[in-house]
Image (cartoon, rainbow, N blue to C red; front, side, top):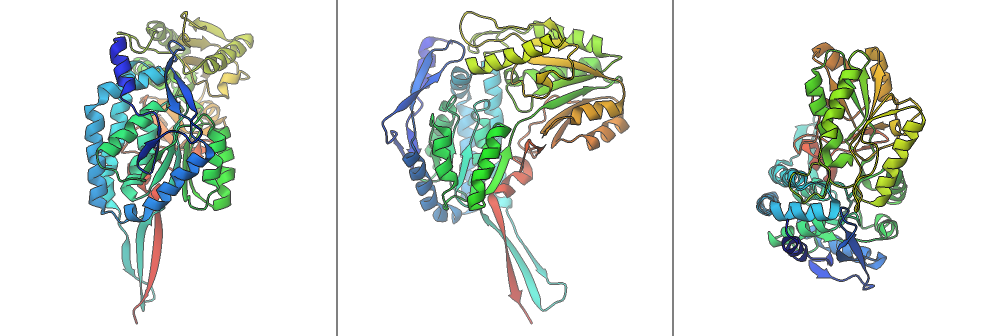
Length: 488
């Protein structure tokens, strides 16, 4: 990619706050830097929202709520369809923008843009499917009428790892249901959300329906919004630690809450598995997004009879990956998002090695600039290694072994998290038995990717509650009202 093209793409994105349909600077006049993690250089600066700006955004959403809720579902759906077409048409520029602020290879950014756009298309079709029911009461003499209505003004806090897809996964069903919203993107990656907001404005989204407030003071700006009685819904994607704090804050207003939190995904390879297919799945489950995904395979539990062969094959594939700036041709693995994140990965690997793990490939940082870390495979990882209980969020695959199906399931479930699990086996009965016993909201059966806009995404235990995507996704933004009709 040429420097001129990169500059043109960045310059085409609004970098102020979007409040009530107007792009405006922060009330303090302050801005913060957006950094390219491949070089450590500043890409641009963005308006730094204050508490007052956050409350102004909520006021704009509250003011627009009634008229937006009254907008015909077909109009809301057609707007989302136009947004899908616009995002798709601009996918090359949007992908480059995402790579510049987040680091992943452009080919992965293009895949995310396509994934993000599909939420717009899916919920454009769901907008007109919202319905209620009419029935006769069991005892006669009255009728039961139920209807679905929008929850109301919503607050979305989105993460840095999938800066557009995690936005459309929340924004699209809210628009379809008739809810207005305030979005606070991660301060590491605000540009993709600002670009999306511009597109939604361009295709006709009314003033105040979507408000975007990037800020470097997430907690300080978010808490007053969450505690404000005008807010009716909170949706957060991020760490479990932060999620717990937000749940506590939301209790004051008894908000409707959706939480997509941390993961510690087990990847189970049974003795009868197709090892080549399992390695293919492992590469997808581990290396998608440089391993910086809540769905990333975090622990590889492999049957002892095939563990050595699986590890060898996986290490060969990992070692062949090309690491570099995501804008360069042929790059498979970009940098981690920050020096802090790379430091965390280094600590986890060092801890595992200190406890007896063997580095099969990788095992350290690489490159003279940026936050690069080598794709890494560890064998002989002991049960007390931190990376078996903590999210790695990096390109590191720790391999352990098991002897029986019961042991495999026990190891998989030995975590507070329960977002996704991966199972590779050619035995149908085993596949169903294990899938039923796994404590996870999603299971990838002989598949390394589970995410799909047409499917309900979400976890159990400390991985959160609520579902995004699928027919279930729009229900998070709808209240059920019951009307009792006296009909003697």
